[in-house]
Length: 233
Image (cartoon, rainbow, N blue to C red):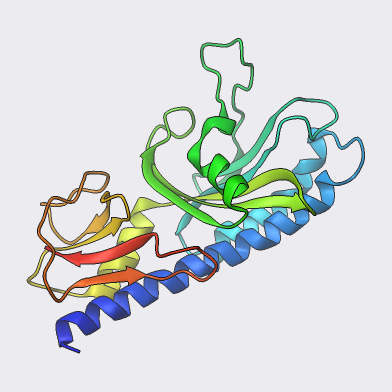
């Protein structure tokens, strides 16, 4: 293995480990959510008790997670058809962010139509979605890690965390170090997540020609396949 490939491999491993930490924390949130939502006639107010767990999820990830919470499958709660219990960091504090869940409203936030909600319910496992523009929520580029919440075969909700693009880039650059080559962290659809070059802006499509020796997958335990790869262009 060349030194060049070795650095890419170690960077991919570092990213994979950090993302596995996010999914492990989400597992705790999913378990607590299932316990609440599986009770008969659960009101949406019962989900407030999840805040301490979300605080631990955010704090433990050292700037990698911006916000987290759960989105309930329609019809599960007793007092509302749908509910998006999500907390976001605002000036160092974790704040509940209300969303417009009225289908008749022009500003309706239909989380059930979001890829990060649909995919884990369909696959039954963890998913990593993005970067994408969350127009209905944060109105910024985000990457979302999400897990299904269920009781037996019954889907109850999706537990998720929005990852900081700056946090991902910080891990990427710290482990990559100074390199002459232009290197990008790319999704399986070819979208750039982070890079060490102005040639490859986050959120754009990777247009470079991969080096013959450098295309390293980022493996994350539990996911069906590597969602990202490191590419030298």
